[in-house]
Image 1 (tube, rainbow, N blue to C red):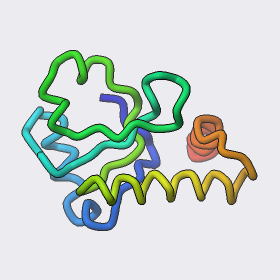
Image 2 (image 1 turned 180 degrees about the vertical axis):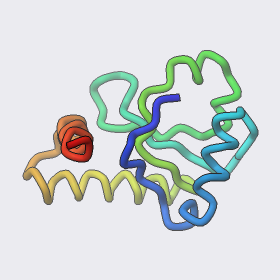
Image 3 (image 1 turned 135 degrees about the horizontal axis):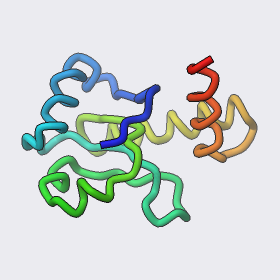
Image 4 (image 1 turned 90 degrees about the horizontal axis):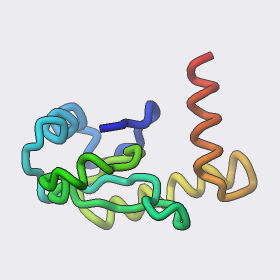
Amino acid sequence: MNWYSGLYVSESAKRKQKKIIRKLKTNAGMPDVYLITFASNGVDLFDIISSAYLQQKAVRRNLPMILGIACGYEEAVELMALIVQETIQNTGSVNVRQYLAEKVIKERK
């Protein structure tokens, strides 16, 4: 699993972030946890993936970078909107991929 270094986490997932990540890495079932990833089709901005899909080996193997974790689908949508708003505020565009890549480069310096 490829994790974004500045992982976005919803409010309800923050309290149990380490537990959620550990369970996701060990393939334990977490039915109400959703992951925000870059879109796998290359056209859209994001995909929201239920952690239940990670039980399938093909999904785990082809999973794009995980950008965020949320408890519940609604929180995942809100978190996705937060990422887009942050991108627009800081760059004036919706090029989320470029913004997050630049953010990682700045953090490493």
